[in-house]
Length: 317
Ligand code: AVJ
Image 1 (cartoon, rainbow, N blue to C red):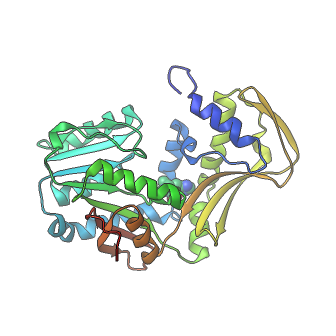
Image 2: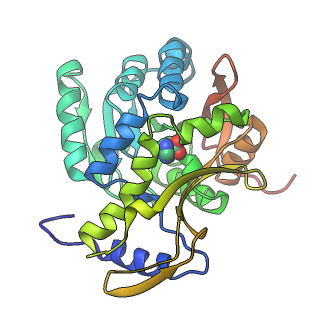
């Protein structure tokens, strides 16, 4: 929320998303200030392995990664970076320039400031944009070899069709010949997967329920939040964890100037987190114009980083 102004897209998404019969609200609205704090807390939970495992993996593969891509050039990071993961990559690659792309200018300025201490010679050139579309990069890096970085297994938030669009746009943004280091969370036993999205301390539940708080706060909602419950379910057909908010009783409420009703047991779908095996990850990349060149996985094969290249595309066999 900027200066008390509500994002009109949030209003429209909530109006459409609460109407039913398939109630769903885009996961991007989970990340207001409070939601981002809660996600930060999630990354430190014992059950939430992705952040920890990816950080360890990045620290381990540094030298090998450098051999694949060489030094110099520009690293382009898609989406909110991390204060631990991004420096690990920059230390390994030692690029001339670093271009973080994020929708939040505040976030970008904070990241640029925190990096300038450790990397005084690095040209940091943030771009405030929606990275799901093609992005115009700063002219200063036009002639540099480029490495895209898409961490966190955030690709999993997108249904395959949107994930492919995103990968194609990344290719458009970075250009043919560019490389992309991208994280995929892997399919794994449910006794590991479910607790990662439904932790004992209830932080993920609070993260999910905060969406309703945000609707009440920003869109004058009258939702009885205590009558909703966080659910994390495995959708095997779609190979994904889904977060839902399930109504515990029949309810009527208003939000964004409209009236809504929901019955006990019905739910609002709030997030997808797709899990891949290496073959499906390669096919997804390939559909987006990227060829996997190297792969690194955690010891238990629970999480992978893939280095892909935007090679010329040949459609014929
Ligand atoms: C930020 C999209 C990688 O899907 O694991 C964590 C978000 N949601 N717990 C994920 C999330 C619930 C996270 N990503």
